[in-house]
Length: 348
Image (tube, rainbow, N blue to C red; front, side, top):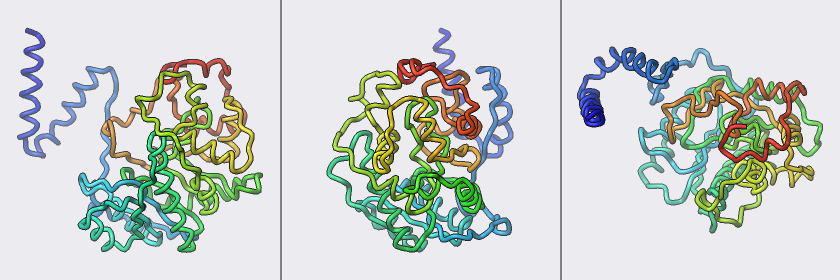
């Protein structure tokens, strides 16, 4: 009987929300949130991000970049809410002096192709590699590398690597990032500057788990990272057994595949220890919080902004800016290497 009543109330609530005028829903959102607060013993707040470029007007605040810079959006175009096209329009408003490059696939429909060409972007229609690689890593390598190569051909000094299903809303980010890495030169002569990556998917406890969704650096350094050997394996998530953190890292999948390939290219002798992984982070990378750049990922459980947060030490804990500086300054306590024998996806 209780389940029947719950299903009934759920049905009625969904119907009411569906037919209610937007003004009524907006007026009662505090009531909905307070009920959710009571249910999960948490404070729930709302982050509002404009969907469309026409909703934004911050031109008076924009500072031109002092270096030629490109923004590469790689991956399949997202059609829902015209997401990728609107992202380009937003970047055109926020970064009018940047070259915008879309590196996608040669099966792009003609209507979307025309829309992007009207926005005067550099459009690359890549042929997909013969093998997708484990967890589709070859698709990301191919589209990212070709986008960065286009930036190099255009004479750009710096480049962002982003995704077609993500966007960052921060303005004046380029000058900030250039200043940041210019003041932290790398001692390795093969790498000019540190590479900036976002905390989103940068894992604190998985060795060499550097986030690959958002990255910024000099064109040369970015090519060094993204011009990677293609993965000849074709593992998907169902093929990967439940392993420990250490065993998962040694499989060299996704982020770890890219980072270890980069280390191979520069002749760095990594050993899959947490101590060495943190040394790599502090020597070759600069981690910034994805919240700082207002990075939005239009995928999976995207309404839950805290989906990457863990209240306890967890194998999927992200490396944020505060933790990164603690590691870089040798102030952060390194867990025992035996902790990496814990199962991937659980608490430490």
